[in-house]
Picture 1 (cartoon, rainbow, N blue to C red):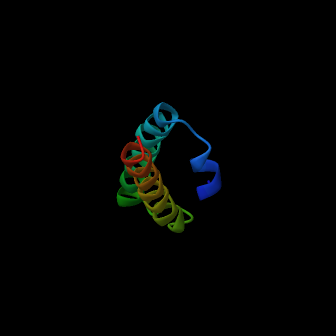
Picture 2: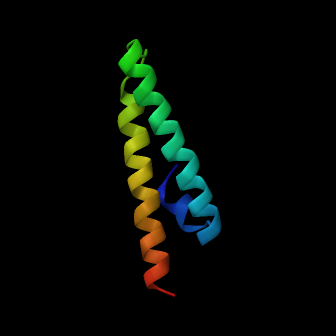
Length: 64
């Protein structure tokens, strides 16, 4: 998901997306620790997406 797409979401949608992505990130890490997943770069992408969402949430809260 691109930054421009994140900017278009409301604060509540961003918070819901953050919960879902954190859950997805945890599942990827757990699956990779048991047996190596096919594409370990998905872990990095998921972690960066969580950071992007958190950054956008902070920016929206400050601009309130």
